[in-house]
Image 1 (cartoon, rainbow, N blue to C red):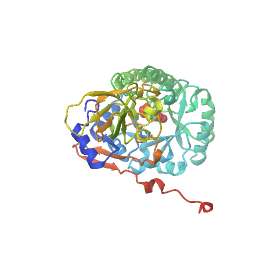
Image 2: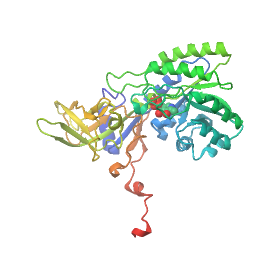
Image 3: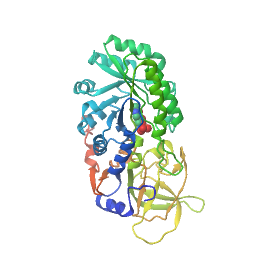
Image 4: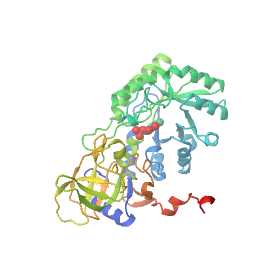
Length: 422
Ligand SMILES: Cc1ncc(COP(=O)(O)O)c(C=O)c1O
């Protein structure tokens, strides 16, 4: 397929008929080649690259990336547990979480690393693991994301310890005998490469004032182009600028800082696609729109409804008859006007019809760029639609199920009838 290089029409038809739709499809070879690029991130004194597993927490994806040599960035205690269950060694997992993990003690005892995101978290960590070491997340005062909702740096963001409160943070660590072995920043998803570089330099300045720091993590956030006109960040280019700065800093301070990066999107966005089926094709008259209604939507690919994000879309016909092209709005299956896969760029409120192959009921509709923040960030079970299945295409071209479709029993499993309604 033109916009989804790892899939062809025959594979889509095969997946549609074997596994049913809606279904996510991941590609092992694409994951591995993205991992290779991240592991080649330029560095002066060593590199640890983590996969920000929130982007796509499927155990199969974690297994592929972990066996390439990537470590894990977990954003909750639950994610850390999920990575452990997928076979990642504890020492390869670092938790950077807004909420102090409910299972922090158990994780720390097993050897999982911790990155404190506030002074209260340093205090909490210090109480359960005094006289050990940790890293701290700092808000350096500047952020950048593909939208305000993914900008997590600067005065409008609650993420990390505000740079001016660093002394207080170090005091808190000292009180508990904690060594601050590393500093971490992450300024947003889809960040502007120039802002990212500027923040990297600011972070390096701050990190070199931490007496015991040996590691600086510059987070993730590297842009990925999903549709024509969107440009991916050149990791080699931004990395090489940073290498110089790390060297210069080492000359000044005598400390050779190891670099960490932790992309999510960059590793998985274009290694995943979402296959749905056209259930209905309707229009709203001469002055209106043509709509394709699919058997998926914001329950699987929420980004367009949330941010006005653009994903490539292709139709795979059930037959080989020549068909014309038609401008369509692609609508999801939820009873919600916002469940649309073709919003205007960065404006989820506006419709932007897409020129697609004339579609008939039963055709497959494939959404590309669906590896990151789709299966892991859906409006799950809205309208009681079950969680979609996931399959992976192996390096040898074979396709296997990596998550079954949820059942209605699983959706309802935890519901109870209170005695006053019996
Ligand atoms: C702490 C942290 N690191 C890494 C990432 C990954 O960001 P991206 O998927 O944009 O690379 C995120 C995403 O929100 C994050 O919060």
